[in-house]
Length: 548
Image (cartoon, rainbow, N blue to C red; front, side, top):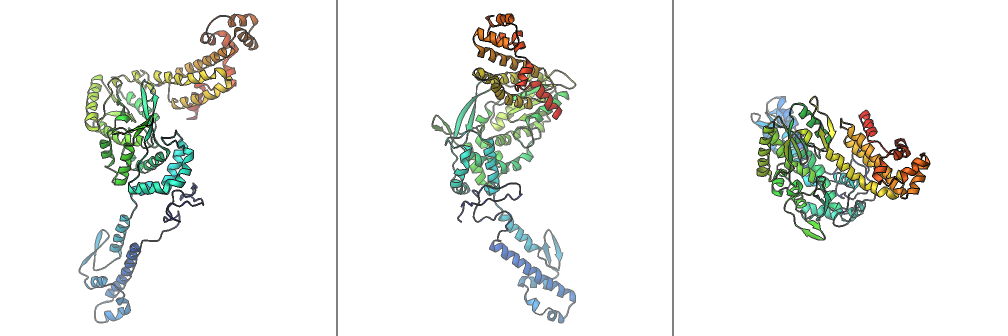
C-alpha cells in the first residue's frame, strides 16, 4: 500500500488502552506498534563493524596477556588475521591512550568508541518536532479531543462529525503539505459575543481540520513550555484551574497584602504582536517548520460577511493554540513580577498583584504599565484597571469580605447579575411550556454555576437566588393562566378558598407582584417545586461541600 493508504483493520494503541480508528494517519512504511523496524543500512553496518572490532580486540588483548616473544603470533594463528587493520595497530602500541566513552584507558581497545559514534548517528536520525506533531498516535489523540469539544463549524461549514470522512480522503495530502511547508490554514470565521462588562468580544473560529492540527501542535508544545511557566500562572494549564488562583489570592490577602493592583489588558487577544510572540516561541522551539506553521496560524485571515481581511496582530480566541501562546507571551510578565518579589495571581490576561499600601500599588501600576508596553507592546486599560481594596474588586467571579482572619470568599455582585441575565431567556421561553420542562432547562445551569462557586463561604447569595428563581417560576405560571377566571379556578384547585381566590385573581396587579404575594406562595409552595425536580442553590452547595 502506498503512503497514506487507509488500512481497513483497527490497530491497538501501544499502551493497550485505546483502539485506533482505521489507519487514517498511518504511513505504510512506518512500523506498527510492537513491530521492530529494519535498521538503516549504514546503522546496521556500523553496528556490525563495532561487533567485529570488539571481537578482534578481545583476541589481541588475550594474546598480549600471554606474554612476549616470538611465540605470540603463533598462538593467535588465524584469529589474528580477522582483526581490522586499525585494531592491529592499536594492539601493537600499548603506550597510546584510547578514548572510551567519557574517559581513557591505556593499552587496550574497546567497542565503546564505535558504539558512541553509533549513538551519535542515531541521535542525528531522531525525528524532528514536526514529525512528533504528525505522529499517528498524537494526531489520533488530537482528533478525539476535537470531537469531544465539539464547537461550531468554520468558514468551510464542516462539522466535527464530518472530520473522520474528510481525513480518510485528504489527510495524506495535508500531511505532506505540512512536512514540505506548503500548508496554508483556512481563514477563521469571525464571531462577536457580548461581554459581561459591556461591549463585544471577538472570537475566531477555525475550520475543523485546522483545529485538529492546532490541537496536535498543542499536545507536543505543552510539555516543552509548561514546566518553565510560573507557579502563579493558573490559566489553560494542566492540573491548574481558576479555583487555585482564587485560593492563593485569598491567602495573599490573609497574609496582610490588603491592596490589589487589578491589571486589565486592553483587547489582549486582539493586540498580540506576532514578532514578539514568535521570538519567545523560538527560544525553545528550533524546528523551523513548526515555527512557520505557528506563524501562518497567527496570520490566517479573518472572514466576516464573506470577505477575508488579513491579520497582522492578535491571536483570536477560539482555536486550541491561542491560550498556550498567550501564556508564552505573558510568562515574561510573570518572571518580571517574580524577580521583583511581588505576590500575584494570573489567569490568562487577568492579573492581580497584592501589595500592602495604596502608594505601593500606584508605583507597581505605573511600572507594570511601562514594562508591558516597552517589552511586549501590550496596553493597560486604565478605565478597567485600578488600585483598590480586594473587597471592592472581583477576580475570576469571586470577591472577598472585609474580615481579617481570614477573609471569606463570596460571589461577586457582577457574577450574580450575569447569572440572572443567563436565566431570564430560559424563563421567558417557558411561558408556553409545562413547568417541569422549564425546570429541566434550568437545572444544568444551576448545577454548573454552583459547581464553579462552591468555594464561596457566604451562603446568603445562594439563598437569595433560590428565592428569585422560585418567584420567577410562579410568575411564569401566573402569565400562563392569563384570564382572571382561569387564575381563580387554578388557585381554588391549589387549595385556596373561593373568596381569597377571587380577591387574588381580580386584584389587577402585575405578574411579578402576584408571584411574590402570599396567595401564590401558598398555591405553589417550595416543596411542590422541588417535587417536580427544581434544584436548590443552597442544597447543591451543601452537597458539594460535603462531597469535598
